[in-house]
Image (tube, rainbow over all chains, first blue to last red; front, side):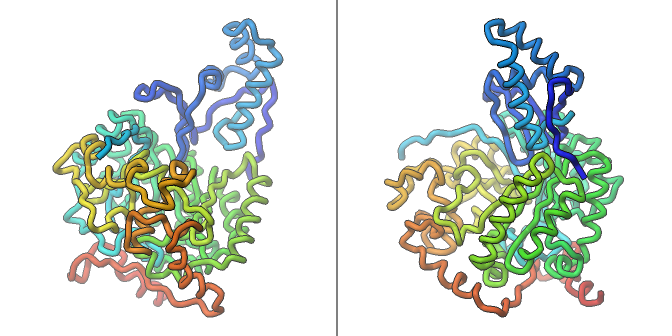
Length: 96
Length: 382
């Protein structure tokens, strides 16, 4: 049986086959295609999700976001990243 | 008429065929099915998919009948995949084997939905009118072995709701990502059998509690999609996000519909893909514009603050139950026709469950049409 994933900062997340991130040129926004669902992604979530590649750890993703958004405190970025990815992991959109 | 705001569609459902080996009594396909000889060909389906992609469609569902009967399924999946569309196969799985699944996977299939009639072969096969259950289990294992995401479509009703916990356990054991706890919807053929399948209020309350419990317990393991039978709801459900807002259904013969059951509103004129382009139909077809937006509504919908939430509920259900497709869906507590639900609801408390009528193929008079017509006989033999 599957075990639920609890994401921590050293984990390396990736998107499951069940969920596919793409940029929709018709609507001009990022979306996730999932079974019978299309999730429209806001800009900050899209920034995080584009860094998920099965190679970067959550810590690395946070560092990369920090370089792009120098005003935001790192702790806050890390918290936001984990919050979003955990939400998606609960739906089996994100695995590690 | 006031011009109506036309949105970008999200999904098309390709009903590749009406042929199906199963004879489920709650089949929501029309009473009159399309013949094989009327089915549109591979190139026409490809043209539809290409055009859908250009219009902004993101997902293609392959359904039926049983879509795996069509030999070109793999080719169509590949075509959609090359256009970067999300592909979903809705199947009974009984005609699949591991090699075929592998082939569809290699062509770029993203997700499979397998329907289940019950949790044990005896009862499930009785409902399907076909020895299907054990085969479905075997195929689901192959689907997961190959690495394809899986949804279990659990079709629940009066005669199997007591097995819901076993159904959830089965989905977990099969390592499905998702389960749809789907109550029978009473359209098409299914309306004949409403009294055999409509659950009692008590059964429904137990179901809702169970689903809530397991949703929490299985967070991160199994995702739930739960649809309450609307005969018991206070408000109607929004149908496919609203008429002609997000969704396009294409029948085996190429008729383009705003919803799967729309042809039951028999005075509407539907366009066919052999005559018109998909985008022309989406924008201009009189059937799509008939109930698009909210200007067609009458009271109590017109002044209701939910009119752009549920969009007046289901037009097909309003027509089937009241004879007026502009009427408020009778499953709404504000509907003046709410009492039409009393007859089926009054019978659910009876102890004896009425017999159901198996789906039969009403297409033409020839004796051997496709496969599966002997399914009831096969069942008796076993």
